[in-house]
Image 1 (cartoon, helix red, strand yellow):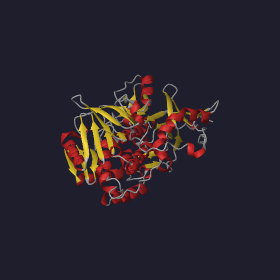
Image 2 (image 1 turned 90 degrees about the horizontal axis):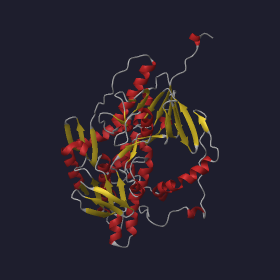
Image 3 (image 1 turned 60 degrees about the vertical axis):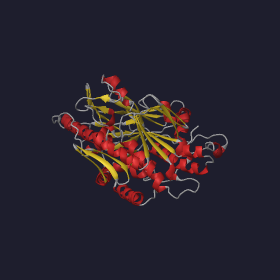
Image 4 (image 1 turned 180 degrees about the vertical axis):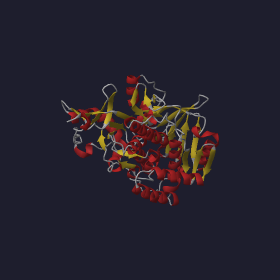
Length: 488
């Protein structure tokens, strides 16, 4: 056969992550003449801005986490692969992923890395055991169990000291996530749970918001930060700024104010919303490309979101550091689309579009029912209109018609009435994270077995999940008869 009649292989594009950056990049390539492999550890696209509503019983996890395969079912040039990326080889142009001991190596011609960021405890990772973050569905379900479980256990408590500790909720971090979380816990106690208990008054719950910065919502400026702080105080949230957390344990949290004075809050539930750090993949890329890592462990990229010497590697979203871009969904969405456009241009012989330019569509945060703050350029305002805008924007970016409809119905029930439909919580949700962390190495070894294979892309089949047996049957697997909020 003559050379001119040979079929040229289609470029292989590997996308790491199914968040905003990875998903929007993949969808932007739907008409491109490429073969895409999307690799993600969860199998769903998470609408992370609404995680706090899952944690406080307003929404179910299914409403904000659509299956990635379902979203991309009609895009024939995409293959979705479950797995956690453990290595990237820029020289060999391969990505290595694992799931349940099975390793798969994926070759690529173009790589989009959109692995996002996780919770940062600023070097105090021991805090994580007692102060869960809010970055995943597992986090939200654990916090839901801890929050609602605290009220249940307070109803059984025999002393006022124990009731006070169980009904004290501390939120660390006064950014949008922390502010929204604190406001919803306060409204949950004062509105939703009213008349639900006989021995306690849920309205007496204490909600504390801590932050080391001098104000609430520091990225929004003094005007909106002041509005937010006044609204939080109105719904019953204690705000302590200039407060540095020095220790966290199962029974409370210790802080130090700007004058160096220490203080302790005895609290059964601590929620960490104070900081983020990029995926460890950023360090792997930096070591091989010579790129720098910033204080949040993000990788410093070129103006076109690529790595030095590697124009085929595009880093988007929370992993990329460029000109002080904020860690918000719009940066990931626009960066993903930009990377997709760059790939199409290169493989169709078109000139590059130029450096990435982020178009700031504004920022917003909801403080409580019927009240939010919005910042669009120099326009800043808060109140009911801002809250309506917040609802509209979040509905617009939510994936799936059904999710939008069900979310609206749940919002009507929660905001116009007092009910919250998603109040189911189990001990497994609360204790599962700790149990998995402690059993992970033993479980992984049992699943992988001797000589676990490494296979090339396309041939890996996940092993069946087998729950490890424990002596004593089902009863032995239950946690001690303590609280769904206490973690000794």
